Length: 414
Image: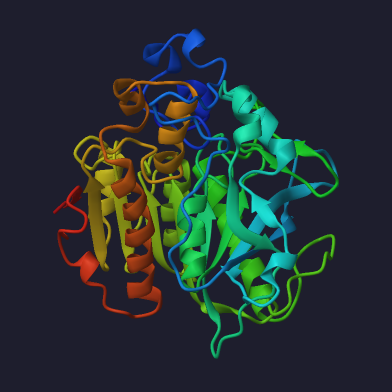
């Protein structure tokens, strides 16, 4: 796999790797996998004995006891002027709050798309899969559904996507956490993502070398979102358009139990934000390179977990250096056969895409590695949940104490 350091603007992106069919990263450039004739036109279901191509791609349903709700937020950080947008403009973000929803009248609330339609087309065009636009999956979340009433407040997690990615990149993981009682806020990092604003503007990754797209910029976004979580917890709506929020959301979040996680560059940003902000009680990096300029420095005394695939401590000195400065609870696991994108939606989507484009088993493995996709999905549902349950809910999780026969691919790295 060809990678580049995540410093400056030489970053691992989907454009550089043609990196994901419908989500993040891939193992090899597309040309190394198959020629254009093999993927330019989707194969429709047939009556042959072969497994038919899907009519629509699907994501795994969450396994938790609660249905999931979702609401978008339009946020502006007025402490950070936006030089690209011009005078009088400030850092602008879209974010989405995922939460356990009330069951009553759930059918009245529409199911959220994986990516907003306006952002989906440029995303697929940039990664070379425009033909899949009509097959894009939906989520399990219902937009605007009331928040499930509980005796206590909801622990909160903030999520940071990878370079040139989108905030729906890890929907499998996000809605799994929400179905188990977490509020999860996913962030669209402006100028390094595909997103859609309420007024119809479409945000795409910028080529401007001055764009705020470094891991440190992502980390500042996360810290600003924590501020917005505190406003929600205090009963105030941070949405700049003052759009109505779901019933029960104001005052439902617990600012004393907040964690963060992210993939790739978002994993590095998570480490950066966790070092800088004590409001983050626990941090999780999904194959983050930990490479940034200036380098990550300082010791961390709060829990941190690394789920690695490509950016292992043995091969990435920055990851090894960050690990050596962890003074609190720490854990590093690796799924054997995983590639950079294995801890995200790709594990569920790529096997379906392989049927659409009639790939053979070897071609599919070039994209998602040799980790069994079914186990890969279960890993990304189980391990982040166990980590945050252990450190934000103080529930002892045996899954984190050592290898499990339920997950034979997962290795605990010393």
